Image (tube, rainbow, N blue to C red; front, side, top):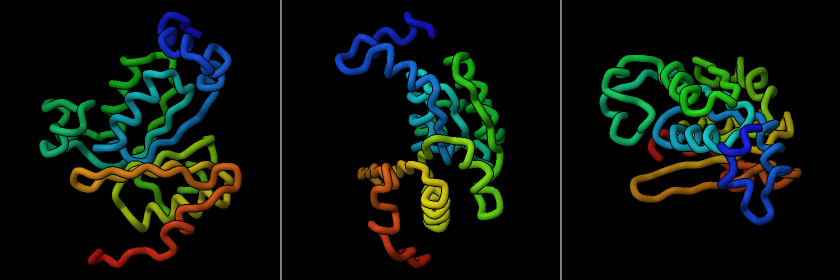
Length: 178
């Protein structure tokens, strides 16, 4: 472990080197490399999460640049996962980065999610969010959900130690007009 790199968090009361070692063994999947996924990926990578998976099949557009700060003008048109992986590798070469240049679907969700300890959901696709919840319940994975709407944000943790699921909070999928 790079003790100097992580020294500002290992000196924190109730964190220390044991917690840093656990973090280095953690495997986190981030679904979405956009407005919410970019800061999540950047901070998890910087703090020393051992393995970060990134799922997204989108490309960078000019309208992303004001809020998706991993990307630059020269990246417009390129794969978000490819650019994010390269930039994150430069930020912290200690993290194992796994690029899943695809959208999460019912055909691939179990295979992709199964390799991780925790899933962070950072997109705005309701049907996909319900899919991630179901797969996390089946695989007994903790599911962290974040969302932004205008100037408001939410974060919730589901399925932790057999806790409530996303469907417990939102039992019905919203209609397309909602």
